Length: 262
Image (tube, rainbow, N blue to C red):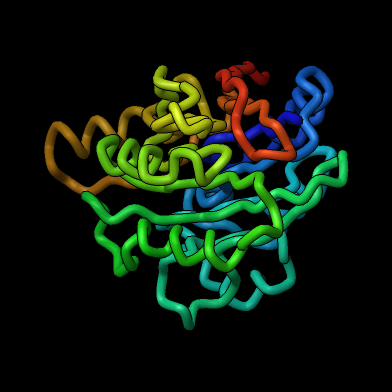
């Protein structure tokens, strides 16, 4: 069984690329489930119902995960409960709307648990310990599904690697998001967990993390504030495919995918 994980979707251009390219990738690689991080879908910050409907449901994306920009679009607080396939980070304040994990069926009718977690190192947030949250959720899932995919939205590579090692043998895949640059460390760990520090993004090639170059350079070179507009042309999609045994949940192989759009 194969699952495609798509990196952070940035803006309208990223959504258009996902809507067109992901159905092709599903067919090419025989993926029965697609998970994508969508926390930058709406103008580069947050998500809303319109953005979600533009990429879901399948044949594009089955499950959308979030991150530290989850609530940048203020109306989404009221909208999220209409989208049970959208996950906010599980280790935030329990009173926040939505849920942090769920069980989703693949095209082969296999149940897959998807968990969204938020890192704490170098991120200014109020998240609880993601490691303790992972333990709690895995205990709650119990034997409902041996196939478990974790989106760990975090800044530090060390924290991401630590999570991969911590969950080795207990999750099918631990994929990092947030930093928008695909890393070349995809591997199957000794316990059978596929891991990659960062899956990358669906965003503009001629940009800085999906944003216009000039204002970002101005900010870095002068220290003065600038508006970071999203670039919606010349998009590349980055993702990762994991092949696993649905009976044991162990990953067999993992590889990166990259496609250019417009």
